[in-house]
Image (cartoon, rainbow, N blue to C red):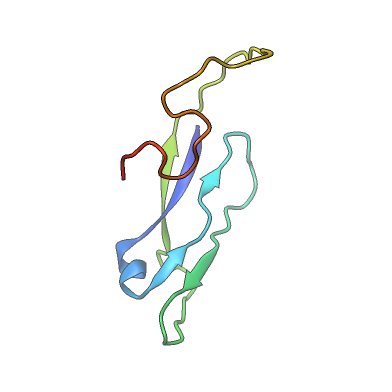
Length: 86
């Protein structure tokens, strides 16, 4: 299992957000949360405060097939927003 780090609504209401959020399945160290204060006021976080949500997710492993070329797709090589859906 891996995990995603997500904002807690109580922190987001204070304009404090998490800025990174993937914990690899093989990671065994201390979980550290990167956060940013988007508000105008200084905020204090105390030891023991609930600051983020940790959402477990399954990690699928499969063999990778190396190919010389990829088949065309409707999306092509377009990047952000190129699917036409928002």
